Image 1 (cartoon, rainbow, N blue to C red):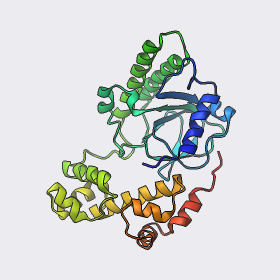
Image 2: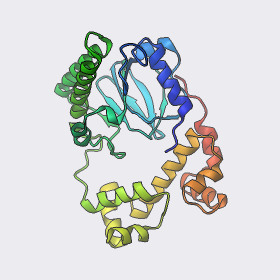
Image 3: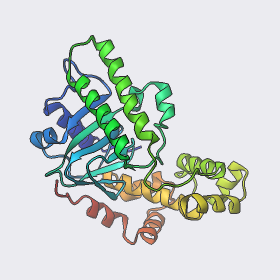
Length: 297
């Protein structure tokens, strides 16, 4: 996974310079919390796309804002939550008039049972969550308690770490229990097996027959399952995953397009350029230029 370390380092420094515990006395490794007000006061949020190796929870208490995740812009209002996962590409929209909280944490900060319970490593989990009114009140209470304990420095470091870990667990367990925005039913085992195989091997093969052979299903069975769960044929699902990774790498690294194509399994720059252009309507270089244009923050 290529991470835009320059932009992600900027995010880390924003937490540090905004007056929140980050790396000095009272800091808690693996967890960072910041209000949007302090984010605005300290420095501008990174306007360029960035790819972090941490989870990011974003919620508003008032106002509204746009936040792009994997090149899809999400409108966020009070009470809603965005949960971005490691490896996903983020880009900030306008922050003026928006008040809320940003919580960043490493997957290892959670205890193992909680991590399993919330499927912390699931790259397909919904990004946007909209709680009902009663859930909103509980989530806000959990966030407030987590923020208070994070800013306090009255406990021994080991005790403080455990308190914060448990409070974060309460918050993410509640968030994970909310229905996703799409409201889809439970996907089939066939689709889940195929989805996981694509996530693991998309850079090695784009051939549906290879996945069918590895999973001991026919290509038709995989396509039916994927069409039912994701609304597209299995081959298109594979190609979209490759395109997503190509966009992530183009947006968040300085590697030449030809090198990116090579890392994604293409035998030549021409083949990669043709594949990308046919499926996006633009060339890799044109996409990189467009996405690198700073947005208003």
